[in-house]
Length: 209
Figure 1 (tube, one colour):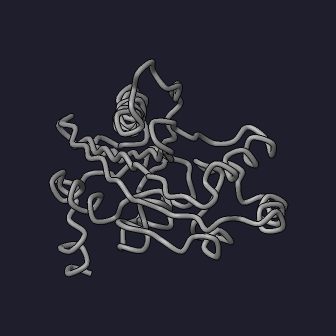
Figure 2 (figure 1 turned 120 degrees about the horizontal axis):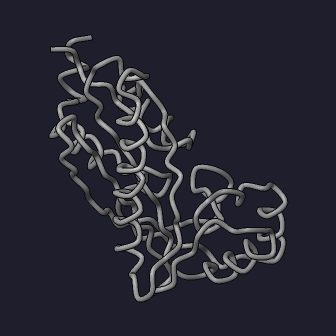
């Protein structure tokens, strides 16, 4: 039997890089186009989980509609993820502009918040497995100069909560409890576990290399 095709349902270069750290290279990238709006009374944790599942299902749906297409008759294992930054029950998405990014940083300054990472893997038989990982992150109290310098660097663009912990923000974050890779965009321990349960074992693959 042919090995399954691993499909990453995300165009995020950060998630691709994180997978590379554990020796995983997706065969295909199929970004999912879904409505990421938060539902009424939906918690940040619920939002992260629902969006991860929805992205995986959407990407699988596109591929299943191509019976003679990119899968070449092989089964697909689809991996999707979503990251939600939360201050209390408030979910901070990707800032639409620099003004919103500034408001986000002011809200995060001098306090701790939570980052929820939803991960979903759908195996070749269509069975979905999903997890939510929570990491606590604490920002130092930002000076006006620090805030404006960070904004000028542009790292807030396209980032949940308006920051990237793997960039300049690392100099602003003295506290983290939990998965670092989750804050970057993909909790690797949980992802490896879900992939193994779906037929793609990181460690067996490494041993065969």
